[in-house]
Image 1 (cartoon, rainbow, N blue to C red):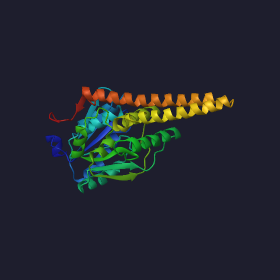
Image 2: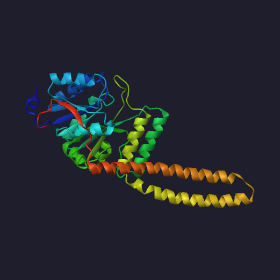
Image 3: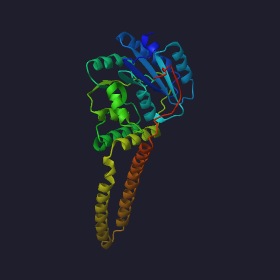
Image 4: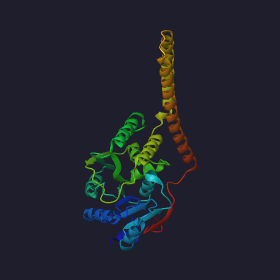
Length: 318
């Protein structure tokens, strides 16, 4: 064991691994990560943050902590979702650089040496970018739509197919922490800091074991929260769409009047469809505005990202 384990000194690298029901992967990802870090000549620790798993994940990681002081564990009091829990774990890290990665091996630990090399060369943010996303047609359309919205209406660019897997210098983590986002879209916040960023592409690997916890509704909720939290331009969009809708309504009314005198009953259906489309857009943007109002409310009451049930292997002053 290193002196770090005994003294609680600041490590060179902290690896943060969020998990939820990963009993089949927890021990393997821990061993694979340590295998990549030990030859690099750096001090390090691993921080697992468990989002209220219902299987043996916590038990397995706690056993690892008993055998290796470099491994730490945070157990959330409940499931706080896939935006808040991973970010909270990153904010608990003390490393001079922090690596964020998933527990299911879809983010390959073999990229860790490259991340550390580029960090040593002075790069503040190194993000892994998946070459492909193997999803069904519905999720593919949703993903492309969310990237299009972020690119055209976001306040800052988002790196497509970046999941947050990568390395961030401590000053980058500190900068994102000061933003005090209640629902942090972390990979967009990294770009917002303006620090030097590099990407490396890699093929997405299949899960080593277990099933993905992401379904359509979870991904849709994530996309909507990310969009609402990272775009203020959308607040004015209803005004523009309302103006365009008013012009279209006027055109339809003129067309309907003409069609009426020509004895064409289809005009009423056209007008009804336009009105219905306006209501659909109206309610959609009201939903986004409501989400922004919710986030403003949470900022006002300074809601913590998560509440902990316990933590293991953390020094008293950590």
